Length: 528
Image (spheres, rainbow, N blue to C red):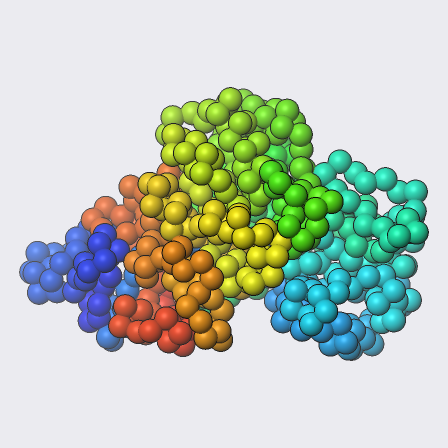
């Protein structure tokens, strides 16, 4: 029948100071919230289980509003380069990996970030040739909007001095016109088309690894985009169905669908009932990323006036993609990092509005403008932001953007204060998936080991605001705020239970807080 949760703080997040003593849950929903003894008296004939929090703190279940679940699993099981701080360390790490591989096997690395290196030098084919000339190499930049390969990789992909830049991409070349091995955005496909096709045992392993880690980090759900990267999109969706079966594994997975496979996925799912897997928005990329200078800006980059970024699609093509999504009765989720990309996206969704009851989402919004914010306030959209980008991108991003653009860059407080709905995600594997790192970045605007008052201090969020990004905001992103994101009567029984109360601690102390339990549908999916 029903379960009584009691014995610790219950932070409902209805308001900053709303702390309750107990909740009664039945059939996966919260029936009542209040004092323990009152609930016992009121529901004594229906309570069959008593769950003692043992002085831990219950929050509404955390949901990552933007990640790539399979990619996160890949980062765990592959070679993680994201914490490497020099070219020499990179070469040493790769050489160690190569020693265990047969000749001609691909070397995969995830998440290199040249901004962590003293000279900020991007590894090129010559550097990778020092590691191996007998194995093709593909290293994915931390932003996932660029890859680098060695000479063998270029030869396999037949990338030469005469290879053109594809629409929405750049084959980076040196002063003599020869490819360096660095491929931006759509140019990555030249190389990726040559990669061995991964079997679905691998995809399944990556997804299972990811899910286990998400549970351990306190996540009850995630909005994830994976369906167009692992061969057959239907088989990828079926892998989600196999892993998140609603019995052994419960997780609120909202799947963003790349626009190229939207019709195929929706046709397959027609008439199917997937209680823990929802098909969300149609995903579109409007631009790249700031790290590789492929985010589309309305003015040139301050540290490279020769470029203002890369438009993945022309404004007309982007509008046509949105129009096609409307024919499928779907909202869109558009990746927009630069302000010109945001402008193109707004033009498209204003021209083809979403149907009532659904919301479009705009993802990242790292660079905005006042006129664009005013246009956003007139739309029922959700802004899908990643607070951790502040910790990762500063201070180098100041050189990219220049002082004049900074007041409207990574401007989370400005967006919230304008009355806009904002959801919180990690963009894992781009950033660490840990929600406490995201919350810390939203509040402090710095890395945990830095000792200063934060980058763009005016944009700091309160702890309450930051927590609601990962709870209420994520629910708003999928128009489910009437049943998710709060601990409230009638809401789903999804909880993140921490061993300490974040409100009682200093921000740097949050990172030592542990997840006691992760509860989905009143079912304990993780216990420390």
